[in-house]
Length: 106
Image 1 (tube, rainbow, N blue to C red):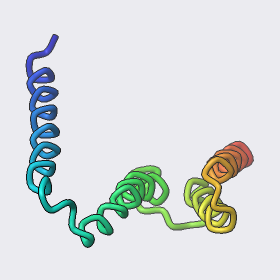
Image 2 (image 1 turned 30 degrees about the vertical axis):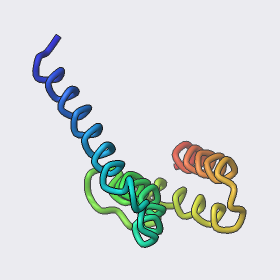
Image 3 (image 1 turned 135 degrees about the horizontal axis):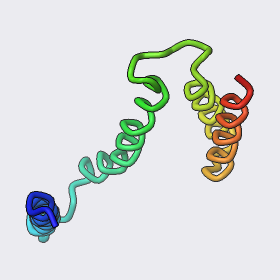
């Protein structure tokens, strides 16, 4: 077992605990301010965007905004389905079907 990996895992656990405990301690009496609560609702969207967008526009490590990028096309189709239906399972299904179709077609 690598010692450096264990140290990193323990350090991440300590930081996670301290930030959660610190927030509980800071807002124990007053509660979370409304502005912070509104802001926190957008964190998952920001994290998902940060994870997904690079995979769509940088599939081979360089920027590819052309129609020959199947990941970008599938992402656009999935975004349209998500906007229109609001259904996460349908969006994922259509996105995966689109990428499979585009990858095996070209």
